[in-house]
Image (cartoon, rainbow, N blue to C red; front, side, top):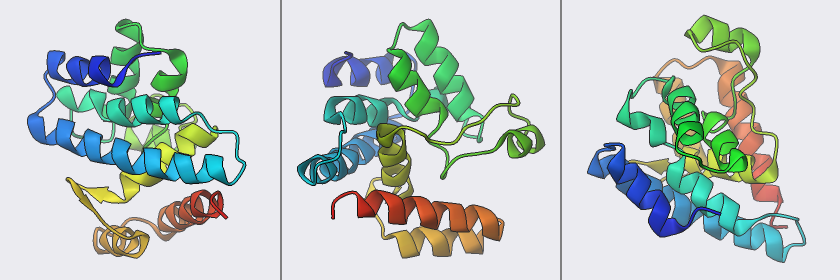
Length: 170
């Protein structure tokens, strides 16, 4: 498994901006907290995978800051020999997922980008709760999405993911 130090080094080597790296570190910190609570509640979750996936979730931001950063990061991770489970976290971290139809509309390769594994869901949720390097509430994230005129079904998808992930620690 890629280590924390190797993941941060990879972000630097591919040219991610310092603010992107700091964002990734904060998402990883929150994601690990969520994973620890989920594991303590009896869920089968891999905290190391969560940490490395969260650290590398925005790897593709060295190439673009558009929504395609998930696909670019996925390809880059594959080309750098990153574990397939980590690459999948990178690919599936946007919002609460993107359907094949939405992907086509957004100009992404026609694929399913929904987080499926627990680790993928935790990283996507943690990313939704970090704006820059500041933690925000899910209500604040939903408010920001509404201000950006994100479609209601996408906002509800993010809310549903939050409820699912938050429910893991009960």
